[in-house]
Image (cartoon, rainbow, N blue to C red; front, side):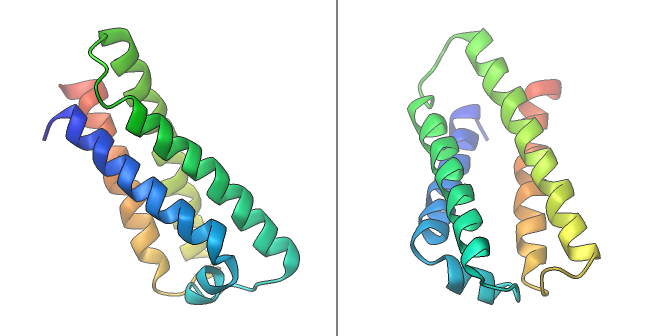
Length: 122
């Protein structure tokens, strides 16, 4: 896998997820067995907006060839996805999310490992 493909995968996951969170916050919360109060829905939509930003930054950076930019992107996404993994795992271990939450844990883990590979190994 190339860094460009990794960025494309990250962009697709981020944009798709953000649209779901922005347009259907109550349904997404319900899917994961979480409550859907007005406050919860608003927070999910804020998260969706930030996730859309991440996806667009990734999409617009697909063709960057400047090494410092690539290193900055991979380190940033490694940190973002690593923290996302920890938060999602915490949500699963405290039973905030139902069994579908393991998908979120796995996605964050795979993205963190992918960006970690490009940052530290390749």
